[in-house]
Length: 356
Image 1 (cartoon, rainbow, N blue to C red):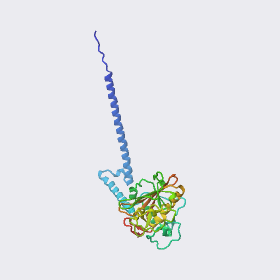
Image 2 (image 1 turned 180 degrees about the vertical axis):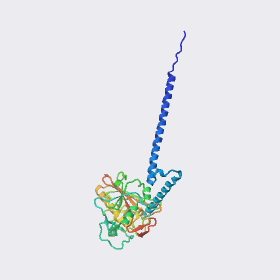
Image 3 (image 1 turned 90 degrees about the vertical axis):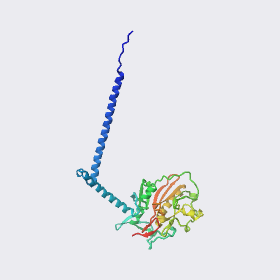
Image 4 (image 1 turned 120 degrees about the horizontal axis):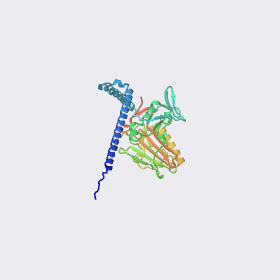
């Protein structure tokens, strides 16, 4: 029997089809690459045109490679101008980025003879406004009846770029409230954590290697609020204390009885050098708000964090104060400047001199 072989070309046909498909794929990839190149070239051309236009050049102004120096010289001038502006801005403490918000209901920031003035509810202004180291129980708020614009600017400048970066506030929403002269953080909302309320009567206090207080926090419970007068003269000097400052509590004595502290070292961890305006006016208003919240909501988580511009400074530039009631109905997130109207402060030495 003789078998006649039949040649089957189906396999070879499949190979040819595969080659054609691969060629089509390669062509499409090349086309995609070319499209991307053309798109990027168009973007580069448009960007070049816009940059040159911004710098005051026309594309026709750059005909030779040597003409590029015109652009670099212009950029160098702009960079020098920027550095000079930043240097001038940092003379008052390296101002950070924030917006200024005026209170819509009652704004005390008024115009008088082309000079903006902050008016506080206080008696007539008295003479000799030089600050001293007396406690804020003797504070005469008449000293702060009229706060000039320069002093308000010092309050704004207290929250420096260095502080914003160090304390992770650079990405926060910061608004300077001209009604209270404090910074409002993230629209007054806080992520301050809280667990089951603790009824201990003393705060949790932290200090760094230099002994500077870095954080104070506690649950403030209505049942633990001081029942007796808690305003004896403070004799313990905080780290960095100098003439002209008050002994400012992180957790106020209106919120807990600091007489439970047995040693000066323990007391010192809750104290920082604080100006009279910062302590007796700005922060005092915040503490009144917290106290009312405690009376209304009972358990309130409260935290105060002194903010230092650098490791070489012993006096805080500001105080970051956060609070949150257990029921979530009360929230507070502000930063209080540590400045004194009419004076410039060296936060490394504690020197306080009259402003020019």
